[in-house]
Length: 71
Image (cartoon, rainbow, N blue to C red; front, side):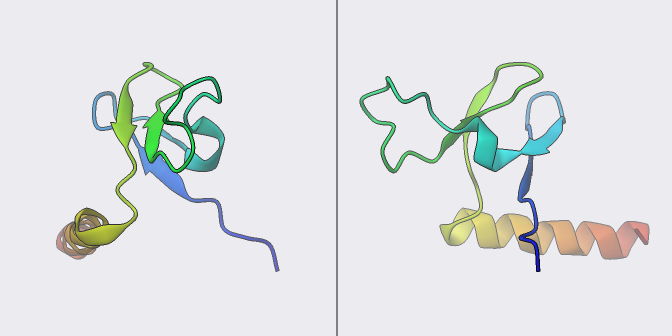
């Protein structure tokens, strides 16, 4: 069974992309354990929201939106 690809959506441009391939640069002193990802389309850097309260809230809001729009 293959692992599902975790996609992120850029809050600036809306581009969807594979978050695993867009982590911090290894030369950054904070790279180890950093949750910042970089959008390959526009270059905007933002924290990943898949953990903690922010991630749970985002998933809940996404489910509500999908039910509302019927997709």
